[in-house]
Image (cartoon, rainbow, N blue to C red):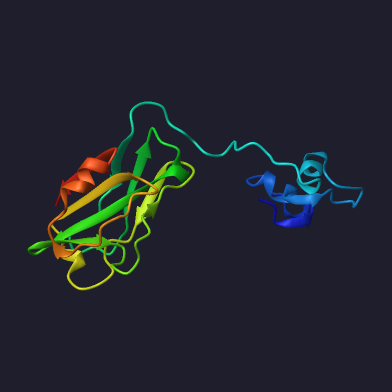
Length: 168
């Protein structure tokens, strides 16, 4: 990412030495930084930011909000290319399962380049009192079922590379 046209030395501090070097051009206007020429020549740069962890595909929760909280659910998907998979999240409230974050949005929760994901599981109703949370690691082309207070279909487990459930 580049935030400035030119480097700005006045932004450099002892605790943040990198702040003065976000420019595309050198601060004295002497020219384009060498590493930027490929960008402006239209060449493609290899993806060196996506982390593909080794091992079997798996999903895990790194933070589960306590009952009553409006904090977001957080997790990691391992052993997959993030752009080819997504997470389907469901919560169990009262007597049935509900898709999250929204019923009218069939997009899965996106897996970030660092293999992390974040999902808002409290978008309305009694969501903060959910007693179970499930997440499924699914191929991007799988049609996620919208569940509004019902049972989870067996096809979720059959199509998932992995899934996890927590009871709180």
